[in-house]
Length: 204
Image (tube, rainbow, N blue to C red; front, top):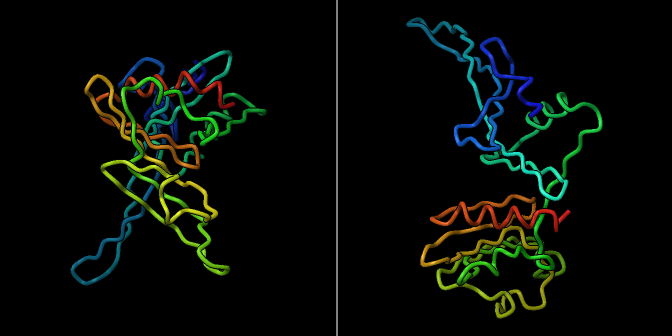
């Protein structure tokens, strides 16, 4: 793996290491500095620079000749990680998010005993000619979008959909966001991750 050529060392501004989970998982680490202001007894400020280390875990998955990058603890911005990978790989490195939509649902739903929609966020809902709303729905019993009268006839885009899944009596949750983020949790999380990953080539 090319990231082995850029290890994170004491003098490094950034680098890579194997993630504790092992397998094909890696950790991108980078240093950042924060200036802290301290006041003495007379109120005179002094400034101290503190160095911290942040990290992002990711996995590299190869399926059908394609390489996928799974960010395991993605923050608001993964630009630093992508920039570091571009530096290692060279010019021509590109990455794009894989998104799931209603027309191409993941086959994960066909591989579990039951599933239900328990959370839904929609945006761009036009309630009047000059009014756009953001709406969020939550239900422990599950929802059927086609039966939700409040959305009937409205133009909207799904920002987030959260499903509760049951497999062999064990529960888990999977959420799909419009920006390509997929979050998985619960007792069957490892199984759900493998089911989602096997579908990835279908969405490219």
